[in-house]
Length: 427
Image (cartoon, rainbow, N blue to C red; front, side):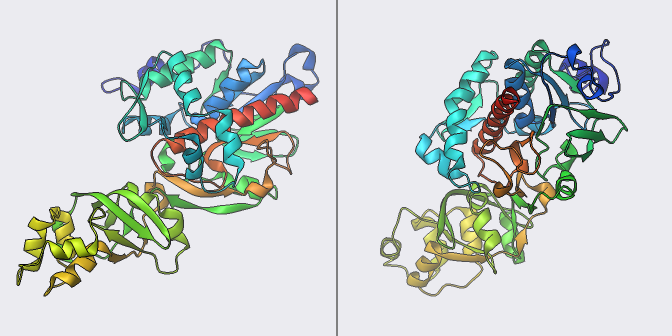
């Protein structure tokens, strides 16, 4: 939207309110004794991220009258942020391996992913006219590597299904009768509500975690939001900072008894990268968090020593050539002076790096914590608030980058909406 006004940009993406829609809401007619005017049940979806948009889609396709509320002037803002990295929608690995990527919820993920799996997500995108491809890493992206075209088509589909969008409606209160109060002073009630308010990362997109207080005031138990898929801080000596911004590839990284395969990158404050993202839950649980890096996982200690048999001095410069060490790996190993090949090989296979803590929550790609699973029915309905369902990062789960986060949001949005439809039918 470069070079356009905010209003023009929203119009281009289909985000403006049609002229015939009111600018402010009152309680819907069912709450005023006028249910005869609305033969279809009313569903409110609060939150315009992928979980909320998907929930609105499923519910509207089932015949519900859906109103989607969001605190920002437009929906899908974090979705568009994800698009800057190509929009990694899902992953192509086997279902058995896929479901193990989620922590929190136990076996619930087998059912959730089965209800809307990676194949279903790719078919959904294709139905919107957005073809996808699977990279050699297994990650799945749109062919255009952009989020905006998909989002525009998705919003148009929702409008065609009759979904009404109410922007600049930030939820500030909710009660047991499903009456919602918004920051702009309006109120509304609904026959069922799906909350998809996001986690606590990238607050400028709307996922600021302020909903925690609303639910806690209703007696819902939660876990504090914490940074997940984030960098970790390291007190690097000055010489290591010469490697800032350089990638460390083909690593094996351990924390406790968990092993991650992937890449890291040295930053001025510590380390970033997929390998450390995968270890976030383990690191947060450690009293003194630390990782051990194996810079040469395809070689044993003995094999590395064997490559250095004739070396009597300049061990690290020689190892850099003979072991094909990358510049950042050699820079990290230069924190010590090496006088023999055996010690250097041990360090290359198990380089222990103490971590002082994670980066701030607002910098994280995603967040852990949220509403506890024991507060939810298998349908994702709150036990203490019948008719109120949850989807997306509000629930206490986490997954690494690689498409698992997006798939989790789509799957929980699908599940919550289908459950809300059945719950309303039963009434």
